Image 1: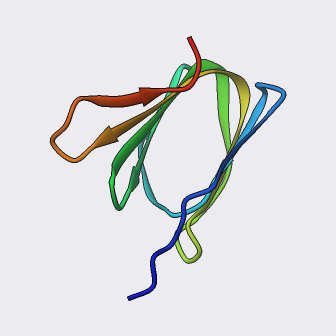
Image 2 (image 1 turned 90 degrees about the vertical axis):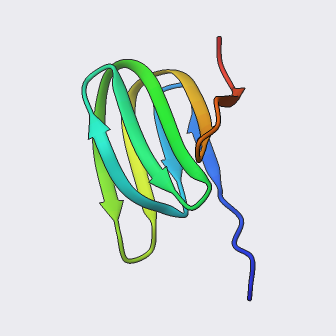
Length: 84
């Protein structure tokens, strides 16, 4: 079985793109919660807006002021935090 690497790109703290996303669990202007094979990803910020999501290829993009990105494993607490 081929292993797929997840790619996360943040441009100028105003645009975020991710790969390997399975679904959008919830979203608001201050938080987006995404599902991926390893658990969940929480994006925190201000004026967040989803620009695109493709279930077929797992691509996701959003704009706004990106303040934090958290990887949450299945049944685990916070694994890492990129921004403070």
